[in-house]
Image (cartoon, rainbow, N blue to C red; front, side, top):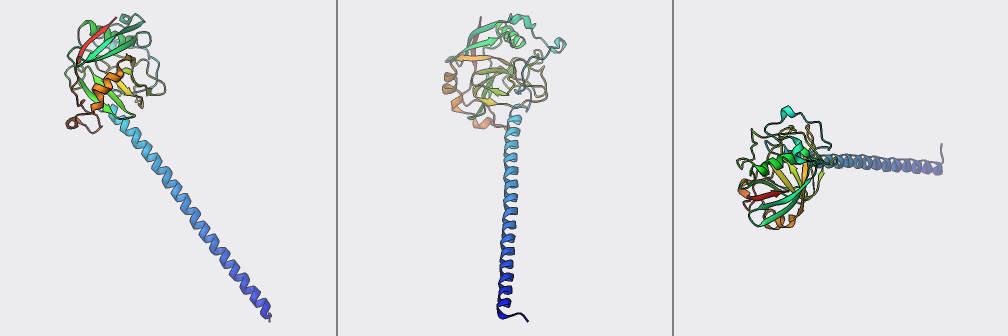
Amino acid sequence: MASNRQQREQREARERLRAYRARQDVHDVQSRRRRRDNILGIAAGVLVAALAVTTQVVYFTAGPGMPEPSPSASPSAEADLNIGAPDSSLAEGRTWTGQLVLNDTVTLDIALDGALAPQAVSGWIADYQDGYFPGKTCHRMANSETFSFIQCGSLDGTGAGDPDFSYGPIENAPADNIYLAGTIAMARAGGDAYSQGHQFFIITADTTLPADTAGGYTVVGQVTGGLDQLIQQITSAGIDPDTVGTDGTGSPAIPTTITSLTLQ
C-alpha cells in the first residue's frame, strides 16, 4: 500500500490537475466570448457603414432631377440621346465667368469649365441666352455637416425634368466621389446619364457621394465667391419641416428664387 505521504502527494497532484483544468475552462470561455464580441463589433460596424452609404444613395436616387455621383472622364457622347440641347461646341472649350444672384441679395461669382464639361456648359449658355433661369426656384436642399447642397433650376419648381431639354454624357465627375464645397454640378435621374437638363446643385459642405450604374455628377463649375453669403443667408436656416421627405431633404426654410444669371 502507498504511504500516507504518497497518498497526500497523489491528492495534491489531482487537486493541481483539477485547478489547471478549471483555469483552462475559464480561459476557453473568455476566449470564445472575446471572439464573439469581436465578431459582433465588426458586424455592427459593417452595418453602420452600410446604412450610411444606403442613406446617401437614397438621398440622390429617389426620382427625376435627383443628382447622382460617379467616376470621372467624359464618356463619348451619343448625340441622338440628347433632346433640345445645343452642340457642345457652344462652350468654345474655355472658362466662362459670371454671377448667379439669388433672392436679390446673395451674389455668387461662378466659373464654368467649358474645356472639361463642354456639353453641360453649353447647356448653361443656351439657358442663359434664352433667359431661362430668372424666376426659377431652388426647390431642394440637404443640410448636414457632411452632406449639404441646394438644388435649383426646375422647370416647374417641383424637381420634375423638362421633357424638351435633356442631355449627356456625364462629364468631369471626380474619380474619388468627393464633391468639395462650392462645386456646381448637374442633377439627373438615377441610372440615366442622359437625363441632365436645367437643374443644378451647389455643394455647401464637402460631400462624398456614391456612384450609381450611370456614373457620377457632371461638375460644370465652381462658386468662386459668395458661398459664405449663400450659407449665412439661406442654407443655415435649414429645411422647411413641413417639406422634409423620407430621404431627409426638403425645401429651403427660406424660399429661394434665382434673380439673375450673367455669363461671359
